[in-house]
Amino acid sequence: MRFWRQAFEIARVDLIVERRLGDTIRIVVPFAVVALVVFPLALGSRITLVSEVGFGIYWALGILFGMQIALRQSAADTPERRDLQALLGLEPAARFVGRSLSGGVLMAGFLIVLLVATTVLLDPEVPDGGWSVLVISTVLVAIGLTELGTLAGEVTSGLRSRTALASLIVAPLALPLVIGGSQSVQALERDTGILTWILLLIAGDLALAVAGVALAKPLEEATR
Amino acid sequence: MTRVRVLLALAGAAVAVGLWLALTAPPDALQGEYSRLLGIHPPAMWLAFLAFGVTAFGSIMWLIKKTNRWDRLAAASVEIGVIFTAIGLFTGMVWGQAVWGSPWDWQDPRLMSTAVMFFVYLGYIALRNAIDDPQVRARRSAILGAIAVVQVPLVYFSVNLFRTLHQTQSIRPDGSTMPDEMLVAMLVNMAAFTLLYIALMAARLDVASAEADAPPESAVAGDAVRPPRLSEVEDV
Image (cartoon, rainbow over all chains, first blue to last red; front, side, top):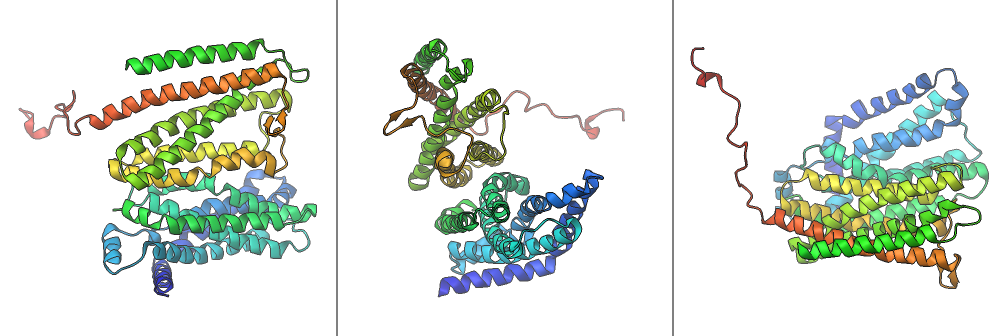
């Protein structure tokens, strides 16, 4: 019970700090939408191609800009704050879970906004029943990407070039999430069954959650 | 040092024998001379798997024992693993161009998972280079090294789990799918590459030990050189 109270408190404080800083809403979301607009302009007159690859662009931008959210400033603790939290008896695993919760909320919100923007701007082709699959896979990708980002953020905490370094670690490891997300919709188009891909995403999320909780203590020591 | 030289000489001789066997084995009826890549491509990937496995072992042992030699073992092994993954990817692309008509296939899980593994371990090396404090570096890279190894079974079993252009394993519990000459050439090369790995590890660990033993604040040539300051220049 104490564990979950700590985790929810960390998540609540993170979201309050993020609301005040506004990095996600004021910077990452507009930047991602601008990047979305760049694609049709870069492709020129081949406008049907934009519609065909619309969801591919969505997943690529979702992962790349999602990393900015996972590694946001409001989720980076100073050594002094960590010391204070340790003295207050905060469990390292509760910090990981709390941070993943707050990041997951932000990430899911960001990906949903990006999905709406993709639909409006790129008019992608959606198979029957595609929207519900897209929303489910988006939420699962958001969870996995946040867990991965939280882990990478901890590993690179306090380092110079933290964002670039963590992105280098997260991007390749996030590829199974991209594949799971994109293939679930394509499987619907091919009528080959989406269960495998949804299960892949769930398994990835669970594996990352277990890794995050198990490694929370060594990571806590590593950041000192 | 002598030990390393002897090991390197033995490994060089073993690789030479292995390559000779690969070059003298009869060519495949369909793939022709390209089948000789069997002497390099699978051994290189085997060595990469071995190296990343040793990195994970060293990382876990560091987390348990907290002794620097485990960190040095992990660091030395990952560098060799990355080099041989690059060799495996390159020879695979050459082979793919000859057999599939394309060096790369974006739909192929084996190629994609190998590339992902390559980039993750490049990230591991970048992480090590970004941290100056040896203890912090050891701890953080041990955590990443312990996590990253999950990719090794993913790469290995990707040909069984997914539909792929890449062939499945040639050596199975019920026997081999290759002619004996090719099988022998491949196995000898795997043994030779393993010996090469041991020799390279010995050499790299020697360098790592020397680096660790070096005094941290020793003066080097150039330390005394600094740009002139305005206040020190006369007649200004």
